Structures are given as structure tokens and as C-alpha cells.
Amino acid sequence: MVIAIVLSVFAARLVQLQGIDPNAYAQMAAEEALDEVVLPAERGAILDRNDVPLADSVAGKMVIADPQMTRDKANELAKILSTELGVDYFRTLEKLRFDGGEGAAGGRFQYIARRVPSTQATDLVEHLRELKFEGITTQDDPVRDYPAGEVAANVLGFMGTDEPLGGFERTFDAQLGGKDGHASYTEGRGYRVPLGESSTVKPVDGAPLRTTLDRDLQWFTQKVLDETLDQYHAESGAATVMDSRTGEILALADAPTYDPNHPLDYSKEDLGSRALSEPYEPGSVEKVLTVSSLIDAGKVTPRTKIRVPPSLDRQDRSIGDWWDHGDIRLTLAGVIAKSSNIGTVLATDQFTPPELTAYLKKFGLGEKTDVGVRGETRGILTPGEEMTSQTKDRVAFGQSLSVNAVQMTAAVNTIANGGVRIDPSLIRGSAVTDDGVRVGTDTVTERRVVSQKAAHQTMMMMERVVDDEVGVAPQAQVPGYRVAGKTGTAQRVDATCGCYDGSTSVSFAGFAPADDPRFTVYVVVHAPAGDGGGGSIGGPAFSRIMGYALSRYRVPPTGTRPSRLPVEW
Figure 1 (cartoon, rainbow, N blue to C red):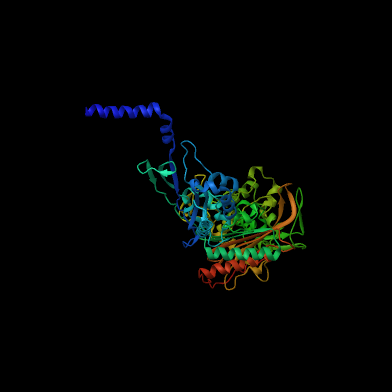
Figure 2 (figure 1 turned 135 degrees about the vertical axis):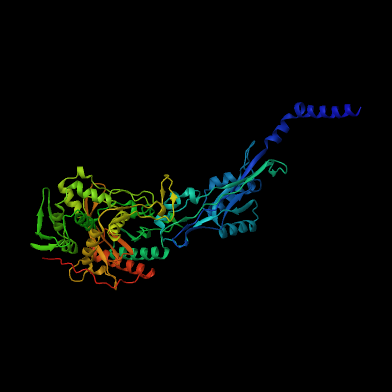
């Protein structure tokens, strides 16, 4: 009897479930869904060489709506939220009214905004409660912060709402970003099912990215560059400080720049690194590469005598110097000290085009530096077998080719490093870019370009450039130190027509102490107003930056006498 009664109860229940009211119970099952909540990972910091944060994550919140509680007052809430958080009104309204539908997930968790500053989010929720609105809460969601503002912004990049949009943030996102976790659970009719399915996957925080930059030196370099552009009403510029011995870049400044905390307040053109993405003709700074190559090949010495006429007629045009003169007699050292185009071309007549370009390629021209910055240009260097003698003449003194600022810094640093080119680097250790390329100090390679003797003799000629009596850039001197340097002035090309636009790029590159180099500094200023050149515009900026670097790193003067190579004969 007992068994019969039990079986009849089960039978009756089955009849109810399958026959009498199947739709109601199917609806109850359908209303159960798996809700998932994001557990955000903390983004790795970007650090300078002393582990000072250049980009970091600070306390933030995600703002969440529970549609079960916000649906009735969705219109009023959407107006407040869109105004206070800058989110789209209509999308917010849709989330506040979300009803899920059959089997829909996320019934009681709708994300209104992410990475909201903690204070702003907390104050907003309190304000809504005072207005008697319910259903708006917050959860932790770290916010990206750039504590030094504009310092190194052009290489750091910046973050969008949910993804990196430039610079190191984007290039090394796989390392910095980590992986968000999630918590999921079964929810039915707006409530969590106590014994339903649930799981939690913890977030994996991003790893830090260590750079070679020195925050304080970077700040000072940017300051000097900004002041130089303001003084000469220039269009843009770049400045680089490199450790002469290791190739590590201690400062890489661009101007104009921006604040990565508020990137939308700035022009799109200012959000990248012009120092790497903007090709230009280097001008006479390139002459030190030409003459060191000639010396290495045994074609000339610093005392080689050259008769320099007022102008030099070549196949397609007449070559002149930046100053008017008659027939003059210069040594090769004098050609560099005075920055004579004519003298450089006459000396380079001993090279064929393939011979010259082979050396320039070893200096790194025409090749990307691969320091980890997106959008880098490789510049333009015509292959030797395709180069005419006319083009070779212009390339010899820095025209008819193009470079980026880091390329040129590394090339000049080859002279400072005793004739050995060392790859420039911006990352300490190593890291993998989004293109799968491993970069950093651990991957640096070296190659000999010219002999140590050729590099030393070139250095001695470069010292004469800053000499008060014979040089064109005495303003580049650093009191108490021996300085080797070279000026540059080149015409700028209009990209739309491929013709010169009437403006110039002026620059100064050098290293100190000249006889025991510690730093190589390069400054380039594009389209300055007036008639200033590399010595008068770039020279003073170089002097200030180099002086600060030597002082900051407590580099003592060598106490030796500077070069007195003859410049005339």
C-alpha cells in the first residue's frame, strides 16, 4: 500500500509537469541564466631606468546597473549618468531597461562605464542615493595614470576606454595588459540560485615594462626642446640623449607633445613620436659619417689639403657653401670646422657611390632601429648601384637622403664609441612587440664601422666645430668639458610635391667628454623662423642638455687639452 501511494504521487507529479502545466515550468527553467562578472586585471607599470613609474594603475571603479532596480526610472538615470560619466545616453538607457529575455545572461549586471576614477564614481553613487535612485553600484576597476604628465608621452602612448591606442601601451600590450578574470553564477528571476552553477577565474595582472629612460633627464630635455621651439617659432623638433657606451636612450623628446591623461585634448599629429616616424634630410651632421669613412678607407687624413673654390659646377647643378668666399685653402679638419659642402664633395670624389653607401648602411642609415616604437620610418638611402654621381655629391653633405632622429643619434654615437656602432635601445632587458620582435638591451648587437683611429681623428676634427676662433658652433660648448660636435642645416621637402618647401631643418649632434665620451646628444628643430642654423639654434640647446646630463651623472672633466688641428694651409 505504501509503495503504491508513493508511486501514485510521482505519477501525478509527472502528469502535472508533462501534461497539465509544461509551459510554466519550461519558462522557469528558461529564466535561469549564467551571469558573468568581469574581475579586471591590473595593468603592468611602465618604469624608467630607476624604477620610477611613467605609467601606472591607480584605484578606479566600474559603474554597474541592476536593471531590476533601475528600469522604472531609466530616463532620469540615463540623463544623469550620460552627463556625469560622458557615456552615450541611448546605450545607457537600453542597459538600464534591460529585461534579458529568455535565457539571456547579464540580467542584473549591466556595465555602464569602466575605469572611472574612484572618487568620481563613489561621489556619483552617493549623489544618486541622495536623489533616491537605487540599483547603481561600483566594483574595483584600475585606471591608467601617467604621473609625470607629458614626460615621455610620445613613446609611452595612451589608453582608450578598453584598449591601448598608441606607443608602448599598444606595442607591449600582451605584457602589460595581463588577463581579466571572471566570476559566473546561475541567476533566475533576478536572483542568484544558491546551489546553481558557479565558478571563478582569478585575474592575472600585467607585468611591468622597464625602459632605459631617465625621467628627470627626459623632463629637462623636453623643457629645453619646448623652449627652443618657442624661441624660434619652429614647427616641431626632437632631442635624444644616448649613453655613448651602451646605446641606451636616456631621453627621447618630441615637440609638440601631449598629456596622455587627456589625449583627446590634443591634435592627432602630436600623439606619436616624430623622432622616429618623421623622416628628414640630416644636412651637414652627415659629413662626419662621410669623412670618417674616407679616413677609414685610407683616402684622406685630417690634414689633407683641399682647395675650395667659391662654387663647384657639377653635372646637374652648382654646389655652394653656406657662406660667400673666394678661393680658400682648407684642411679636411677645416672643411668640418667650417662645414664646407664644396670641400666635402671634393674629398668624397675618391669614393664611388657603392663605396659611400656601403659605409652609410653600416652606420645604420636606411634601416629601422627597432627600438620598439610603432610607425618608425627607415628613411631613404639610395642603393649604391642605383646612385648617380650627382646624388652621391649631395648625399656626402647630408642631402638627397633621409633619416629619423634616433638613426642619426646612433650613427654619430658610432664615432663616440670608437668606431663601433651599437644598437640603440629603449627597453631594459627584453620585451616582445605586437609584431613578435624581441627588443631591448638584451638583444643589442655591435658592429665595427670604422677603425678606432678613424673615429679618434674624426672626433678631433669635430672638436674644432665648437672652437671660438675657427668653428661655426661655439655656442655648443659645455664649460669645463671637451666637446665634439657637428652642425646641420637642410632644406625640407614638401611631401605632397616632393619639392623643397623653403623651410629648413637645423640640428646639432655631439658627444662629451670628447676624449672619453659618456653621452651623445642630438637636437633637431624643424622649420624655425629666421635665418638661424644648426650652430645658433641647435648648439645652445645641445649645450644645456649635455651640461645637465654630465652634472646629473657626475661625470668629471677629463682635464686634457682640446684638439688644435690646423684648419687652413
